[in-house]
Length: 66
Image (tube, rainbow, N blue to C red; front, side, top):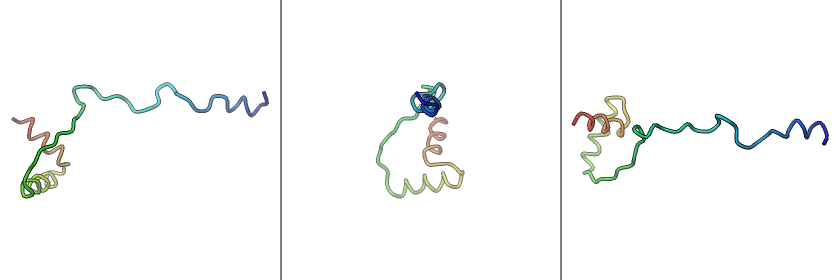
């Protein structure tokens, strides 16, 4: 085996600590689908924008207050 082959021998493959870290199961988000009127959807988006949040985060925070 020549010298350059020895240097590249460890390239590629799985590496310890590499990749996306898993999310705590209690914080994992799920998709939900439901129907709203266009007016209601727009009100949610406008309120979320005014609060500086995504619509998802806005609805999540609202639901947590129930």
